[in-house]
Image 1 (cartoon, helix red, strand yellow):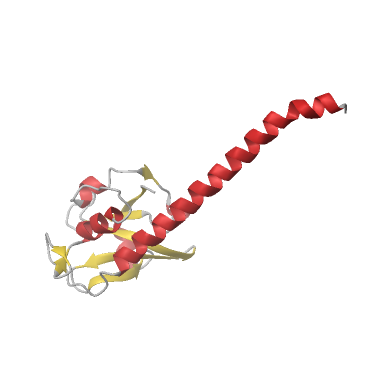
Image 2 (cartoon, one colour; image 1 turned 30 degrees about the vertical axis):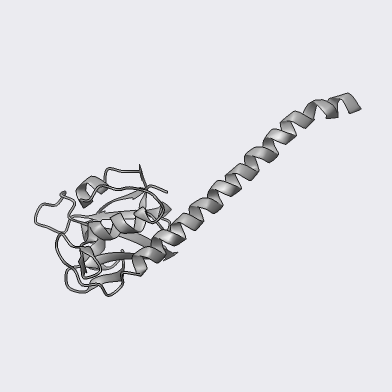
Length: 159
């Protein structure tokens, strides 16, 4: 190949380098935001559940998501059914920390009544998530426990 042919390839090479580095930066930025969302949610661990609660005195599941994502300047609606419409849909096998999980825990099988945030993916059958449980307060659970997997309805990604 002649030197002029190599010179013609330089702009293409530069585009590849620039694109690759911008992807790495955005992925790094997503990881930092995800870490902060999970850290913020975990700071509420042990806080008692309170329907409609939004503070460390008492909090419900949608307020936990609201506060955790607010830490990275992502504003979510206050109600879990509305939060379930934000971001992009994610398949179970593609879950990552920071993804939001939505459940139908009431009598209506498809009405979203509960939400949580993925904190860790440890394998095909262990996806940890943090949520405000009515009986335990803010705690972490396994999505694949019998109770939660039967009530799981969707996952969304906003980061």
